[in-house]
Length: 199
Image (cartoon, rainbow, N blue to C red; front, side):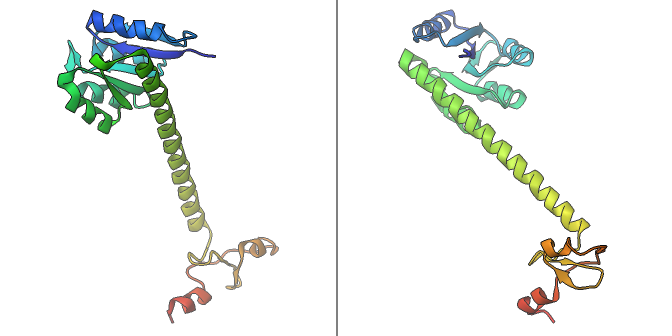
């Protein structure tokens, strides 16, 4: 099983050591942890390699508050982020989750179980969001193809019948069985015009 790649962005050595200790306590050693002290270093690291999750302190030497989260999300939207929050950062931490971070953890309440659970849940939430985005992209592409097809074929937008060169309207399966059939101008078929109450 592949290890979960974690980037911890934390400039306080004591806090960093504590998180490392908690992750080391996890049975099976399922995590691969790298620690950096600045946002700039973190962004460079994320450009250079794939990371599953970022543990992000909000008070760094080169960035603080919600802007720290925004910088990571804007440049690397596919990475899962857990905000490491001090007591004074709680409101900003909540804003971070609204902006796109998966979770925030209060440093003073941190434990091995809490950290492990947050990592697992954050990865699942991020996976769900990616799948939803992919489905929406597929749906958008399918709708574009349908619109393109409707422009190419004279299809009634109501019943989806196709108008042949003989000016008659056919169901698609029937239309494509007619040898040498050429398409006409299209529009709304007479039957649908009647249903719509248009003369």
